[in-house]
Image (tube, rainbow, N blue to C red):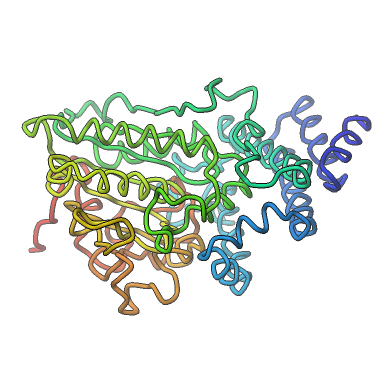
Length: 444
């Protein structure tokens, strides 16, 4: 064991020995007794050690530092994060609540206990333990790669983080491919709506099983078939770096201007291609086969979706644009995008931008008030719809805020109950139990 830890220490360019020690203890405990308690203890040790290592070594990594600060949106974003570090810590603590099974100290259910079936961090579920271990593995591998290559690579594109964080248990050997996950039929044997098409794309820290939980949550709530697009994680810290690179194309003028942003990893690029292909193929169907086209995105998946929508809008296919306006309903959860605007048809690249309601049938954004990721985007200070800003694509009529629930996890910490949000009128939240998608009926 000691020689393995020594190897990691040398190749990580100074990554603390305690990371390797904690990882090896995790492996040993997994072999001897794969208990949730042992997993949580070792995982916590690894996370603390890795964040410590990253904080100490970050200033010495010119590729990462220059890549992030080279984006004219990321510098103020980092200042925003640092200025709200207390809230960030509280946010991370809120996420850890999921590991308690959404149960109070007296054994009674918490208010969001109905989400227990979809809880990504319920360690009683062996597949959730699998996903947590995968995320720890990817985190360790990504940090080792960053420290090892920081002095030899010149750009972020030179670090193929998708390959560096690929695991033996991953399902796709071709790193330029992405998986989708299809819920074959709605629950309880109800009849599907053949004219409706539902798609979901996950956010940071993505694991395949958790994508399935998200799709099942939507399918159970709305009685529809749901196809999930898998946006595989490449280690939580790297996902956040990549998320920063995709944060805004406002200054660059279009989504094709990626030179001034961080380079997307191959896993997210593959997810973007799959989502584009899926959405485009639906929009090319004959009009008589189309009802609502429902696109749901969470977290970083919102940024991938925005790039796909921008590409479709920029293509200026009039048939597709008409169908988008008539049928496409876009719903985001915990959206970190600074803006939700697009290059409008007929405008030159870098020209006037238009808001989503001019292009799509319906757009709604859902956010927990204390979700730190949402505060970087849809609830960002100065861009909050309640503050009167409207040029960012967010407005009072399309943002729904949950002021009770906390956290960022889609399965465990985001409600689909219309009564949990600060305003009514949501098309998505009111089409549960197979109700038709559209404006909710007036209250009696």
